[in-house]
Length: 138
Image 1 (tube, rainbow, N blue to C red):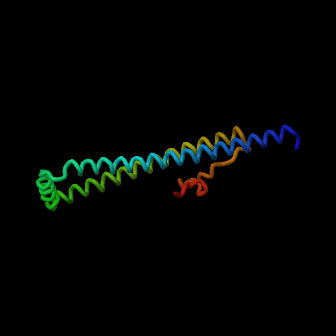
Image 2 (image 1 turned 90 degrees about the vertical axis):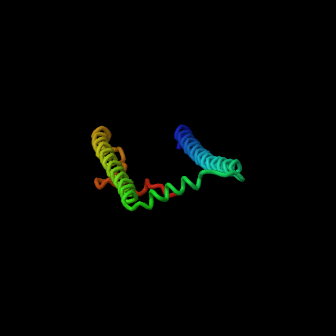
């Protein structure tokens, strides 16, 4: 190898190291944000419990009204049917959006192959499944 190729390899290694460091720092920051959110939630709940301790509240009346409404068979069935239906509609709409995005990416992939025949494929399949290598398991 000549000096130019050695320098290029060194820069590639430095770039890979900086990307790895940025990835690790981002993961640490996200973990701290998640833990901080849980701590803030616990602090708020503890403050609410401390402020309400030793005092009479109307919570029993509210719970009794909620229990009476849920105990009504038809009301309960309608509420659960609405929740289930809205979840199903949301799932189908997300599936449709995902399929549209994959079709668009497949069209772009064929155009990019025309422009640059040496370009590597993303591994996206027609069955709308992602490349198994790209899946992240946490």
